[in-house]
Image (cartoon, rainbow, N blue to C red):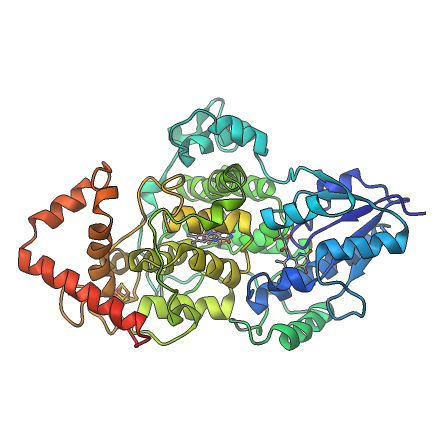
Length: 509
Ligand code: FAD
Ligand code: DLZ
Ligand code: SF4
């Protein structure tokens, strides 16, 4: 007689999961399901679906080996329902119970579906992160501005990571000003660790090819880690071979190097294969050994116990309507170049091609290339959000939406970013080698060949002058514009208008 169903979702693959801690091996049954609704709420990249399904199948096998009873439904199996709730109802009928224990999902859509289901469901907190939602809300309460930096300091104190008593190691909380070096192509780096698909993964790849082969993205070669053991090896490889340069080259972009010193660990942390704290502890250990500099270790740890925790807190604090926010009133459709359509902009072409092949782009590519362009061009932030949620292997709404809607598109009206992350082509030129082989000229500020980022940057600032000219961090830009020769200002705005018109008409820009 089964007492309760224990739901384990595709991004809850941690043996320490609250629902599993609550479960009883002898009486409860674990429910895992590959379902059409989850695989299609956006057109996920085929590599992302394959990663999730393969990791789920490996996790189910590991649970069975540990003596758990697992009811696992494959997408291509007869009888599998189309949604998580329908699967719970079906399994409930099969095993004669309506009692369900689940860890709270990472998306409002699914939380609401579970809460509304005609089942006796207990939702437990997801305590795999460092700060609980209550802790985040208590920190946020009464603050005028929710700046990540202050939250991060509390997380340093809480975890004790890189602390000397109650002071930050080395005397500073943040070493970011050392982290702005452009990378050079002749600096040889190791790639992230890659894994050969086993039989389980091959079977998943065939299924994904058949069902989702038309989605944006290249499925093979597939090299992601799909088990905790593999993810731990990827972590080990990163701290030994790549962490040292992480800080220095964190913002750099190179045409011939898709990963630089980045860890490519987000897909594994977000699935639950690695815990955020263990990853940071491993990095701290390396720094204590004296093999990596302080700016690398601090910079990396800040991304996880700072940014990752902070965006999670914001997503759940802001509520289910967060993804529909549009503070700047942007309505333009996402242009075809985001789906691989031809463009003369080399930076966009590269970021999109790499995204298509790897289901990965690093932070500055996401923020300062594709995100920057979408914001400058006034693209509807909901479409931008759906794009990011679809195309990256690490994308789950709780982490993707605050980064896109908030940090990148300023659609939440400045909850996350104190000013919009916009830049002209100059920034991309400084941090990358994209501009050297672009059809546009980054040094040209006006004219047919002028880099579109140069034109759109001013066009954006002018469109939103009322909103931003009093922002103390932006006033200087408006003063620069006002000092510009009138003819040049006219040429810039005309050029931006012509560019946007061409783009809207579907011409190659
Ligand atoms: P590294 O550069 O090696 O960084 C180390 C780790 O820090 C990452 O693995 C990740 O866990 C964490 N991290 C770094 N920056 C952030 C951040 N801003 N928010 C949360 N965690 C962070 N990250 C996701 O995990 N999922 C997403 O869907 C996602 N969407 C994004 C959308 C936009 C528009 C932007 C600008 C950023 C987004 N990010 C997202 C944040 C960041 O780009 C990725 O976490 C990072 O690129 C993952 O690659 P990595 O593991 O090589 O990271
Ligand atoms: C993203 C995803 C996909 C593609 N497929 C499944 C699935 O078939 N079964 C499942 O349990 N989870 C899947 N997921 C992850 C969920 O969408 C994720 O748990 C929610 O979005 C909350 O983060
Ligand atoms: Fe991108 Fe402009 Fe550089 Fe071309 S010139 S790569 S469009 S920033």
